[in-house]
Length: 123
Image (cartoon, rainbow, N blue to C red):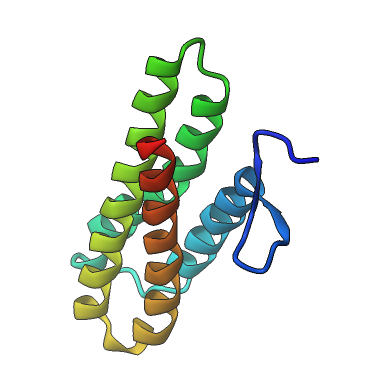
């Protein structure tokens, strides 16, 4: 039996999307702590932390929505935040190429959120 936060993955295993988005937000924060701060990276770090952590916050809000319309709106915001996170991860690579491997892994996870949310919005 699954709850509203649990979805089957391709292997038939159940994962909790709320926990997954929370884990992602934590990974973004840890990643940003490792970025050398300077005049160029400071605003990028700020934007990346905001967008990367708001994916989970908006997903949680969607699950507490009062209507289907409200759910779709909040899930749409979570999808937009995931796309924005992908953008800032690409930008940070330009600021510090040494971060490329970690940024690409985070980019892939954000991309998977976009796909998951888009699929949910179609249903």
